[in-house]
View 1 (spheres, one colour):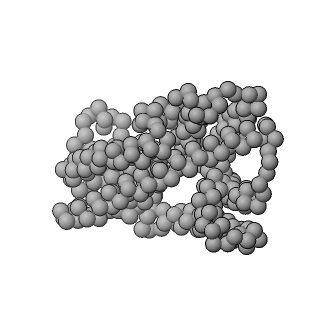
View 2: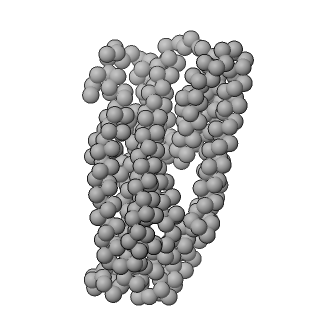
View 3: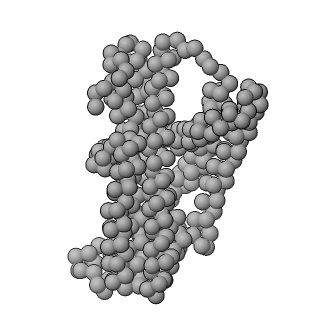
Length: 336
């Protein structure tokens, strides 16, 4: 157990970290922060293997610099490839949304009247409402396009900064003064929280996407059911699965709606399968996440709801990391 008595340097570091966490969300810098932390943590994971192979300082630094360039390039290409897939005919999000709209329209025959009152009368009415919405929000959509470009630049800058910091850590062994040492300890805990949450969630999202792929590509075809846009749904399941708890709700809703294009029985079968699988995954999640951040699902849900109310979607994404960091600070002080 570490010393539980906080000195003035620790308190100042907590205040500065707290301000930085809020500043990141208020000024929409979360993508840059996450990108930088991802590169930084990947470099730190691989660096020990390089140090064992290359004992010389110069050779080690050259290898790490090359590794930084490779990781940044691979992450950039992966992001570009994912965007290209979702824009292609095979994975078009637009086509998926259009298909879901058509399915909902076709389901009017089996929906109760109180729901029908809130739905467009037909596809033409749906398109008219969509056109009106687009005209009313044209300025907002233009801003969204500009914002997407700004976020992309922030992500690239964040990855470069993360690589530079990792390279500097490998080159220098600083002797920090008290406040700097307290700040380094705080940032180390935050980085550790990021690594545990994100890498655990990547494993969970991979497992979730694998089970979904088995259902959509194997089980349903064996039963003579072939759903449209299967690859898109699997990709979406993985991407939104990176968001704890809420991601499963998003992907499940899409799959059940698309399944209803075949029949109500297929939709119910999909719902039952997904519920059963996710119940099984809760045990895996408890083992994976529980061993990493020691947090129950209800704790994360409360943190996500509170952060969403305060900061919107960015708060939902940041909530597990921020919560894991806060718990780490409390655990270090032997308070939880």
